[in-house]
Image (cartoon, helix red, strand yellow):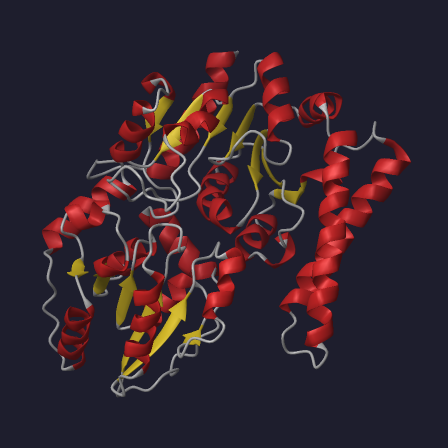
Amino acid sequence: MYLFFVRHFNDIDHFTPIVWKMHKDNYPVAVYCMNPEYDIQSDYRLQFLRDEGVKVDFLYNDFEQSLGLLQRIVRFLFISTLAIERKLVSDLQSQLSFLSRPFGRLAGKIGSRLYKFARRRFYNINWARDLLEQSGARALCFDWIRPHQHVVDVLLKVAKEMSIPTLSLPHGVFLYTNDSVRIAPRGEMRFEKYYRYDYIIVQNKLFKEIISKSGIDKEKIFVLGSARYCNEWMEQNRKIIPRKIESNNGNAEKLKIVLMTTRPQYRINVERMVKTFDILSNFSEIETVIKPHTRSGDEAKMYENVPLSNVSELSSVELCEWADVVLVIASSIIIEALTQGKPALYLKYLHENITEYEEFGACWTIRDENELQDALMSLRDGKRDVAHTDQNVKKWLAEIIYGGRSERDVLKDYEDFIVTCVAKKN
């Protein structure tokens, strides 16, 4: 069995295509969520895999034979209380939301403490060994996760003892060409998480160079392109995304715009970003909606009172289809916009980092608020001349999606690589 361990929206986004491909080609695969706070029942990609016949579950619901009654009770309690938290905190329509949210947070705290207790008490080396033996594990596929998170550490230890290959696969698309991309950079040692894995997969040469400079052996790093954004999966993904936008949604006379934001810690000028929200809301000729980053966490509160419609519940793919123009700060969703042929305006003035697509000239770079207003007015008036060439776009998409190759079967390459890693260990 080829085991894939997930924990949140982003790694599921990048793992699903690989699992789908391997399952189609009759390889035994299973997906286990390590994060009991994540709602695996509502994730459309995990549901798609289930419908295809793939085993998908919380990791803690299986391989419990040797753990006993107490473990079952604790497991039931932490999974149930965290589910209650999700329900109560997200139920903003309830008339009692002012009560449900505090109770939800309390349930979350209880659930988190029970989960931490269970990790220390039950999910140890013996449990991990039973898991790998009972599942017939051939390879363990994680995302770019740190070994101390969830139960990764014990799984890595036992996999090494049993000579089972461990792989670290992408959970996002690395876009930055400068060194310190966060407000509080952690330095080169932020890449120490890769030391424990046998193989590290990246989408492009840029990220391979960056992590190899930190001391990671280049021989462990392989460029395979982006499973999430390869054409084969993008076509399939558009068939299965939950459609929530009606075809006639929006004012046909207005320019429809979606703004995809980035987390503030990536050197975002929050004050100017809020000012940009106000500028966009004051245009009577355009209709703008905002989609916060999928991992906004506590900072999601900053979007609660913005003068734009918050569409965080909608698919970014569907939003790109709906929009006439896509605004990005530093997000990989620009790939979706460019492949759909939509004008992609890169709001360079809102952060201090440098992106790869900026250096490739694969976007319309906006350097201040005046340029933004001029560009939007030009697009509103029907002028579709964008400030970049199709050649530059194609060159960058080849780099980021296909690992620098003009032609590549990305999903087949991932499949072959994982299978070959197993063969090498045997």
